[in-house]
Image 1: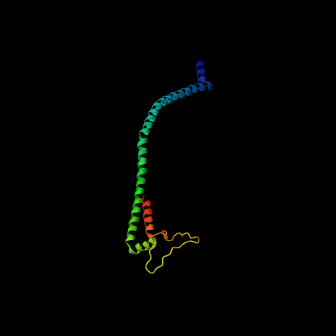
Image 2: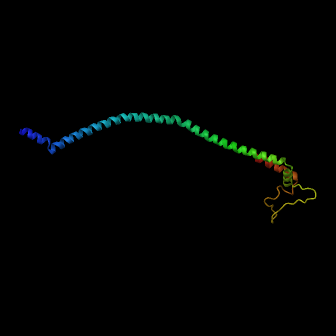
Length: 161
């Protein structure tokens, strides 16, 4: 009975329990490390394949996406340009309609060509040093009227380009 008693005491002694606990802990750590290493080795191949597929997709789609973005920008520019041209056409239509009005046409002819009605006196406003003031009649009063007309035609031709 003494042998059994001693075995029971050994079994419950602190040193024995610590030794058994250490062995069990070491076995668990070893098992978890081998599982992690096995998982890592499996994921590394998958991760590499996934990275390769992802990079291939990026390379394959980069050029078409760049083309798409540049075409969208060009479409936006063309739409903006179309709207500006429509506004310009509307302005020109308004101007054309104004020129059909005889009163407006007479006003512009008098202003641009320095025409005056019989009995009226024509004049040009000049500044203190002989310079013409802003807003004064256009054209040079010292030149013949037809020279001013052709200068206006040339100026309009240049602005249309």
